[in-house]
Amino acid sequence: MAQSTSVEAEQKFDADASTPLPELHRIEGVGKVGEPATHQLEAVYFDTQDLALAGRRITLRRRTGGPDAGWHLKLPHGPGKRTEIHAPLGQPETVPPDLMARILAYTRGHAVSAVATLTTERTSYQLYQSDGGRLAEFVDDHVHALVSLGDGHAHGWREWEVELAPGHDDAAGDKFLDAAAALLAKTGANPSERTSKLATAFGDLWPAAKGTGREMPQRKGPAVVPVLNYLDMQVARLLLQDSHVRLEREDSVHQMRSATRRIRSVLHSYRKLFKPYPVAELELGLKSLAKTLGRYRDAEVLHERLTKSLDELPGKLVLGPLKNQLDERMKVRKDTSLSAIHARLNSPRYFRLLDELEAFLEAPPVAPSVTPGARKASRKFVNKAAKRLAKRHDAAVGTAVGPARDKAFHDVRKAAKKLRFAAAAVESIHGKRAAKLSDAAHDVQRILGEHQDSAVARAELLKLGSAADAGTAAFTYGLLHEAERAVAEAFEKEYLRSGKKARRLRLRK
Image (tube, rainbow, N blue to C red; front, side, top):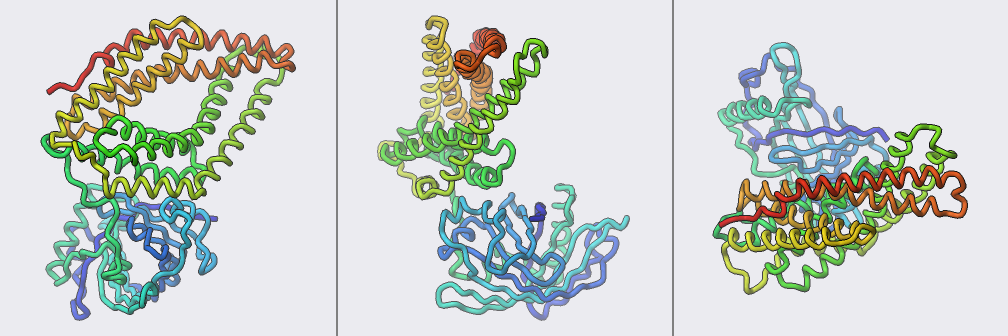
């Protein structure tokens, strides 16, 4: 199905029925105003019965009439901007599968149906620069809305809209929109407080936006605030990556697992700020989700690593069609893991976890003993994570060479990851010092990540070389195993040389 995606930058204005049209050629930057074009538009809006999409400022509609007829999905992209995805008209009551995949993390198994119909008489004017390039579009809309939720009601109004042409420069675009707003205000229009036509149509039924109203972090304010702000961002990232995984975008499983692990890690590091039961339950759910995502990601990393190793060997040392066999074996492993991921993402268990995460953030179960003083409290939690890293390091370097030592360094890596996320969560309070500590921990995580990938590869190669049907291929697997052992030793030395910084850094008063 053909689709297009763009970032929409626009401003809306309220205008009375009698307000005269503005002199558009007087907007700074406009060299020419195109002839007016009039269209009759009908847009049917879709949502769940509890307006799950509207609560997240997501718009899903099917529009007929005008040059952009089709299905439109609009997702928040930043202040005054939204990502808009278009799909062909298709069937009136059937949301295109690719669009549906992008919203399942928000609808969570609940049916999506028509909730409102908006009929618009639109007159549009293309605005051009002096060199003839299209700058923006001005539209004059007379809208009639019919809401089908609840008792139903009808509503009519007029609004203007200025939307930048695709491919605009952000700074120049913002300057143009400011100039347009100034001229339209002189004409008698006011910047609209509504977020969308749909919000105006629903009136008092329009839900409050989820995730709004969070306090700004303050050094002497509540210690939970910077942590909750960080969790807000990571949950939003998790929900975004959900759609990318469903659409099988490259690297999406890795990104979704990363967001899942960040949330779990920060919840664990700062668990004493909250009542224990909800945090423990969320950690269990997140751990299970990360494990499901991890099976695919681990196979992906292992496949890429072993393929690269085989490619680097001289051809005469590769005994047998090992690359083809590797591709077939890893395809089965990845396909099986991906099927498990899709089953998980469509399960009530997963949707319940998302509900619980959002409920936690909307009404945080803060522990009664928590007192103000974010800087002091967060410093204690971060430094505790730093001490854990140092302790894990001491245990690792004292472990004899072999699988136990590999596991010990993997434990160091996990401690570095916890420290990285704990510090990142409070950068808004501790500034550069926290960022520096987070970066140093990231370096340890990266180096020991290579060490762990090598350990996993060696285990796989040992299994392959020891198989009853390995035959002469055992020789090649042995060569690769030895090469991986040398790689692991090199990364261990690099860690011992460069990891001191992360082990010594602490947040200060």
